[in-house]
Amino acid sequence: MNGMEVSELYDEQSIEEQDAPNQLGNKERKGLQKTIGLLTKALIDKGKPHVIGTHDDPNYSELYRLLSKYMPTSGDGEIIDTLVSDRAVRGRLKEGLNSLEE
Image (cartoon, rainbow, N blue to C red; front, top):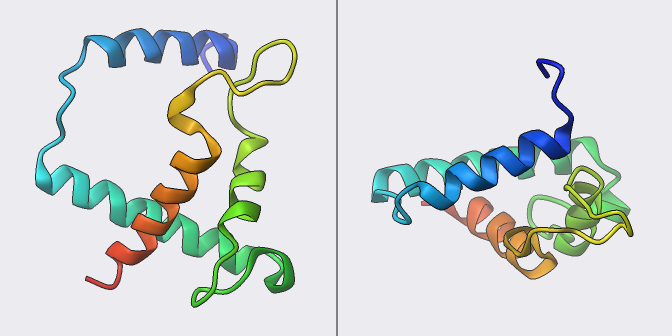
């Protein structure tokens, strides 16, 4: 990653995001939701159905647990960004899968 640590990259992105406009256009939002839906389907396909669930009945809590392994954390292991909280991520995964049905 160009010699940067993940935490440095994350901090840099956070600053840039704070300076960016807070609104996405409708087209961009739909595109992001569909992308999240496709990635969620891929995770489900690669996971164990009795743990991750199926496309018709995904286990969002377990999907979050898998994703949380890749989230930036503080020194004590706490996730440092409330935008990637359990509830927020599960909601986005669900929205993403639902957007594929539209």
